[in-house]
Image (cartoon, rainbow, N blue to C red; front, top):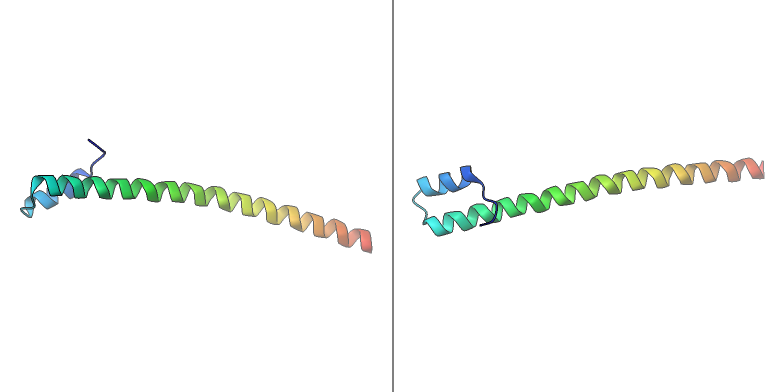
Length: 69
């Protein structure tokens, strides 16, 4: 069985949703949240990469301007 959100499962069961449907819905939501966490981790890495590249470009521009002057 995949990871399942217990509170969602319990809420669906208390709303008289079929056991199998409630279990599948809870598993899908848990999987979706895992995918969102993966995207957020990748976004953090991208932010660091962008910051590094901006700093490197600023350094290169500074050196070029100093060379020209």
